[in-house]
Image (tube, rainbow, N blue to C red):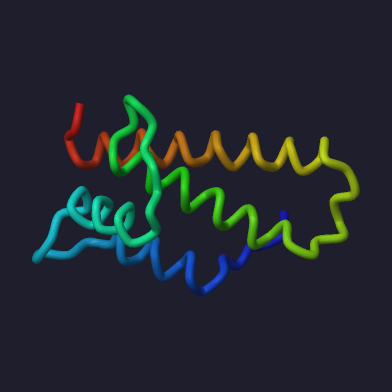
Length: 101
């Protein structure tokens, strides 16, 4: 499998939202992210879920732009589904780590 490098802005936002910091919880930083990027949450989504999903979408869109490797919408749809599943796994991990139920 090829190593994937995230666009600088996406990686910086991941670090800002989820890297350990003593001064602010990741939930507070997730709320700041949602406000900064004007991301709407789903009815039952937590702030962390919405951030993880948005970051996955941004990474996907950055990777899909100008990508000639994927010729069909079906191939892009499969990648999109895989990214959303990865986002769901990341969200579950964040919930477990944060002790949020």
